[in-house]
Image (cartoon, rainbow, N blue to C red; front, side):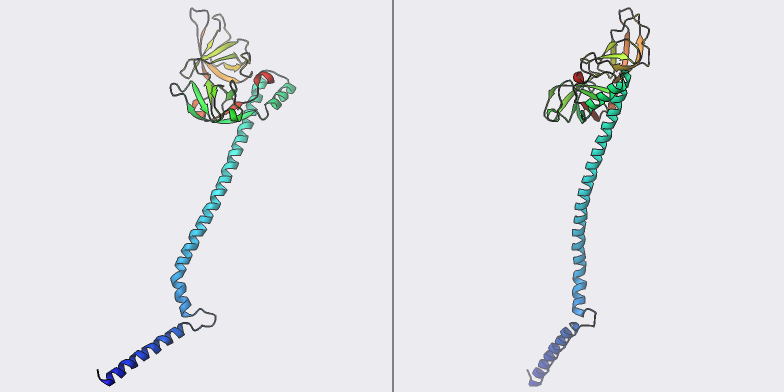
Length: 278
């Protein structure tokens, strides 16, 4: 290679290195209060990444905060629902006690006995063979549930009673529509006692009403008497839908329960001993 060509190539390389050095120096030269070119390039490249990372962590933090906030709101809402439920049950018990024509002092004393004895329970199962036979609730012996405790619906209407077996966190409820159930009742305002037996199809029969009786008519409301030693007196049980006379000693009387099957999601177990209170 000729000497002049070598010198020209070396000169080009030298000039290129000098130019590159000047570029590096120039992009790092501060521009007053502004960022230099190098900082601008770095910022432009990494800014979207930084914003993305920050957004992700902010989103996670917000989600975490909202989760705990929502969890607290749900717990507060459940507590308020249970409190409203208890108040409604106390109101229903008060109306039931008024049906028995007790004095004001007796009613107040009874309410004090029932204070803290209303246990909310959710239905978690039904009898597979017949939905009108029994229910399963999510409360059991660990919650104080025992055999023969009275069970009411959200409106204070009679649903049935606790029967065995009672597990630690579950219990079975025999409904008044079960064929093996029996409740001593009386028409409201009338002294004609009888016994309601379930017939397994969502209705009941009112038994032992003499054929000569003329007091019981369609539309009568039936309430508990407390004579059976299981149910407290004055609780609404059902309504008479038909009264048929026949040749037998007793009338054939059909009754529909006061509770509605579609409303049996939340029940009230009365943990107080009815025999001690009444």
